Length: 435
Image: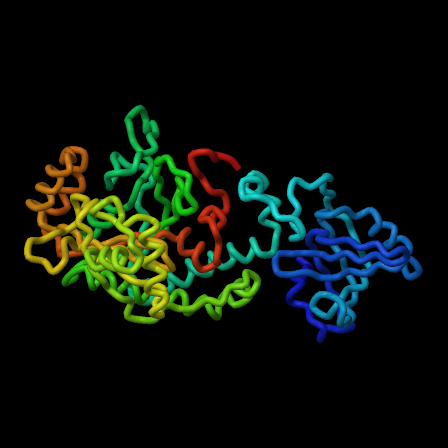
């Protein structure tokens, strides 16, 4: 295909001929001269049409509307006043596909549209260069994170999206009809990750989806979530799991500084990598900081609220830490989480908070079948619903733990976005099933 992306052409290509294809981003008619800014996914190129040089092409350029798909072949000339210090003098020009007018969304950047309007017209919204940058950044972020785990000999897995029951309490499930039998969209790969610890797959990771049918109207929740899940065996305690999370996240953000330099620049983001050795504080310490420093006491004695996480984020950022762990939550302990009497912490569960937002949750799992079944009884879970899961604990299950990291939330924070939906191509929430 004879096409060159606009960012691959520089002023050093003066006198060379290229073909560029994209959308008519801006059009300026100055009488006998027409300028068209062609936009592709990597940049822009100014096309110049002069009536006294080529009347046929000039007249064709006069018929171009905003966001028409166009193709141009011509010679590059250096021009300090043009975008990128170069412009093209077309020798061939074609309107490939016309765009209706008026446009459903202004994408030149001159008019701001609310998020709902943008999501309703997502195909148009995503044409904006900064939106391209978000999802190019997202792809490189996931690629870098997976790279760390591949280099450290973790096995990439894919667990079922349709499940017999949910792995966690608290969140509603999306029911589906599975050949006449009741089933649900996966709430988490938790049970399957743990089962794999009994197979000899002692280090695994998955980039997948999770579904939560909760009613919400916040900037941090969606119904279809992209998750990065990790599980590892033969651990001493939850700190081994936190070490993996800390090292992989630090690596990912360091890689983004170079791999996604253009995207970060387009978004106006100066990405700082968290200082290594993230602070690790007890749940009780977190509550004390909130009460003593901010006179804030979360209503739930066993958890931190959104405001509390944000305030703790501010507290640690003032000390030079954009990421930190809170360990030992006494509440929301799922039956598969390990909690032992006499521990330094109230539980072996932790959260990672990054820039004031809970980014990941994890901990050491219960690997003793008797204690696991006791926890299920306390949580009111019917063992027969997860008999396939319990079976894997009967024949040698090593100590293990893991975590789930919200990729959408991480992209939101890295890209400096105000709402997690902006980090998702086609987000799903209680009020949005299309596009």
